[in-house]
Image (tube, rainbow, N blue to C red; front, side, top):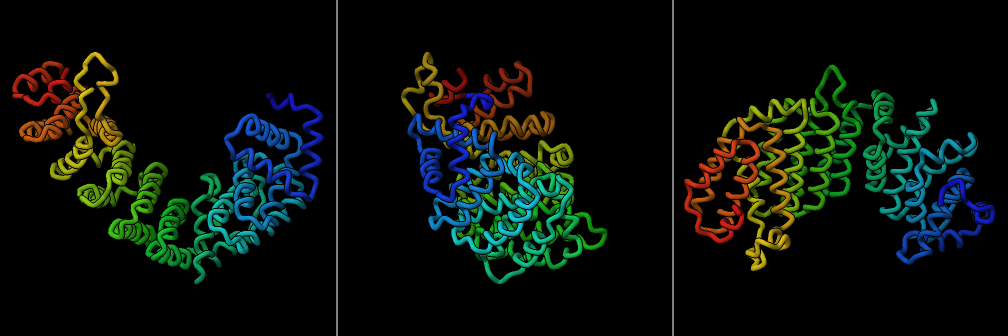
Length: 436
């Protein structure tokens, strides 16, 4: 249904629910929105979009009312999820100035009083988006800055986490505004985030990484001390600590924040590139680290190789480092299993049987890495790795060698590929079928 087609009856029903103090109709609505049963789910979404189009101010206020008043954490969480789904940027400008001022003060109270951490996390994201909308309108929210500074320096972990979430979720356009407002408090803020990065609480530690990414403009704009240097070192130490304590889900979160940093501000990492690559290679070479985590690390390394500001330095890495980089990538290709259906060359399914997601990710990574680094840089190393794998007795390694050959074939002539194939004795059935 198009927005312009909302019937008058539905609009009347929407107004009645939004203007009432009764939260039960919204609780029923949430059960349909987050359920899977049709047509209730589609009807619930239609109702929400009707409310958004005709009564955006009432919708915002009603959802906030549920967040503040419902004794059920799941209901508060769902209300916050719906509020984020409907987009703060579409709802906030429709509030009156009086309503906006009310929300500004009472949302901060919500952050102090909310006891459910999943709900608090959602609320922090809403506050970040509210701050962005307030700034776009040319207004300020000094109380938010005071709240962030006081909370991040608090001894109460919940307040620390809350402030870090708000900072980590800052919309990109709002980050320079926040950085400028926090310049007078640079030193205590730096100290607080540095301490958070070494917190025994893994949630705080990873969220602090996100806060560093959001405030990178603050920590790198100072003409004096290099504030970012300490923070990056603490991020890497924290990453290894998470891995050593087998908290890989959190470690992946930390690596993901580093990926965001490469994508947003790659030039900042130029002085640290060699050390970062070596540190990440140590992670990839650790046998205790799972393939899922290694794929995140590969994404980080690939992001650096593809970044315009970092690509030249990546191509100039020492031969030993480059060899280690490609060797660790080859390990992903060993995540493959034998399957009888594999040998049915007339079946498309047979072609894909046995190939695990990790293997496919490894192929994709090698292909993108070879493109980013250039054939002149990687072909000699790939050929060396190819020969080493083909000399192995284990069929998986020989198959990985053939897979590497298929990747580098895109970077060299057909004649080169034929010479390589004809010069080797390939006895494994798996390898023969991979060539076919």
